[in-house]
Amino acid sequence: MSGDARLGAHPRPDGSTRFEVWAPDARRVDVVMDSAASDTSHALSASSESDTWIGTVTGLGHGDRYRLVLDGGDPLPDPASGWQPGGVHGPSAIVDPSRFSWTDDGWAGLALAGAVLYELHVGTFTPDGTFDGAVGQLPRLVDLGITAVELMPVNAFPGTRNWGYDGVFVSAVQQSYGGPEGLARFVDAAHAFGLAVVLDVVYNHFGPEGNVLSRFGPYFTAAYRTPWGDAVNVAGAGSDGVRRTFVESAVRWIEDFHIDGLRLDAVGAIYDPTARPFLEQLTEAVHAAGRAAGRDVIVIAESSDNDPRLITPAADGGIGCDAVWNDDVHHALRVALTGDTRGYYVDYNGADDLAVALQHRWVFRGRRSEYRGRRHGRPVDHLPHRRLVVYSADHDQVGNTPFGQRPPFDHRQRLVAAATVLLSPFTPMLFMGEEYAEVAPFPYFVDHSDPELLEATRRGRLREFSGAEWTDEVADPADPATFSRAVLDPTLAETEPHRSVLAAYTELIALRRRHAVLTDPRADHQVTRTGDAIVVVRRLDDVTATVHLDLGDGSSDPTVPDGARVIFDTCDARWCAGSPTDATGASLTMAP
Image: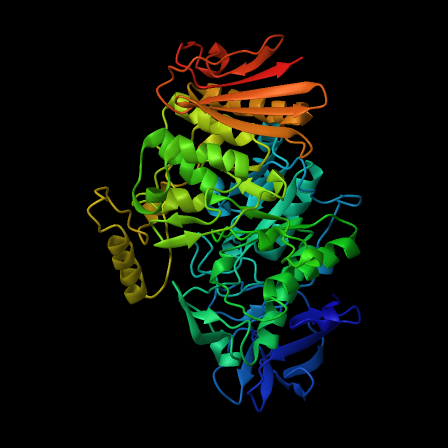
């Protein structure tokens, strides 16, 4: 997709900048330069074919700031802004991607097969809270065996502290993280280390502060309601312009920033009854951008709908996403290890349901959900396990607790959870820090400038956890200390028991890579229950792998098949801080 065809401000080689603004109801649109040197206004011309306003201005370049004026009103930032250097309330700035210095020629992109994802939040991943700071941590992820870093949203949000899901400019890179040039440096460095980069993008809702979209066009519709208010308009009148905004944003990450994949946030909140779904359109455009760049690019959806159409190829009547997050494995695993049945965990029967998920991908394949009060999901057995992303923790499952505490696993449970995820044929994802048993919480935090909005956010969190089942302290999302407590400390991995946990994770990922039988979709795959244990047997050609998972008290007795050898056992002193234990956890045997 050429920059000349995009919404927003795009520099040209001749030193001019082309502006295009979608404002279907405006009678006049002006670009007003916002700088000490110039307050020049430039009128744009209406394009009846696309309901946009277009114009070219000479003498502008990277970093020049501007605002848009509709019908003589207040100057506003650009909905298609690529950069908000002064924050969400400030002017937009021109981004010239030709300034980025790339060294990743020949980079092939990201294939789903063999991928091991690592979800991280730029602001808390290092004390610096920047892209450049995160680059310094990439070598340890390489040593761990990670193949792809998944960044939580980096589009512009209010203030400097936010999960990223309160963003209001879908294409602007957060300035406090390092802005667009910082993101480009991070991606280039990741590729130099052999790491792909997946970016979490949010097209289902916008944050409450700094959102100017409704001033420009019908970006929202009252026909559907979401937890964040009116739904994004991808199917009603004027939705062609909304779709264009989001599709161009998605493609821009691939073309301008060499991103290797997108994770689409909460797609179930995008209501779309049209014959050509928005998600299909977006996924097709992203794949096409990857092909044009000569790279493999993937699309991962976040959804709890348990709908296989999301990951069914478009040619077969599906949406065409490459993978989808699988909460069923997480929920069943957590209930099995902790007995926690609060909230949505009430639907899960621990080890029994984990066995179902390991065999059939999802627990809910048409079964009744008590939490939802209806039947939910449909079978997905016909699609390979690798199309489902699994985890024992992620930002939501950690943050959806009063204080953002990580899973309450003891040492044995932590290793069982790791083996469940990393020895499975699914695509595994780690949440930052879990590989060395990080103790920092990851609560929800914000940095809104409006005191009333901050107070409303506080009250909302208190209401969310006001039920009798919650007795924990609720972290104040507006308190800077809530954010600072979430910053990782990877030096913990230099001490026990963190060092042993890291060694176990590293070995599990290495075993996953070394033994194709664990992940190859051609392998025969059988799951059985034995007391408190789950046994997964996979056979490929003349190789048999047996994974034994004790979800109970560690008293089960794993049977080693004749002629097999144990190649991983959580009882090994190497993974137990130098102190072997007799309590059974997880083991992997191989035969012959």
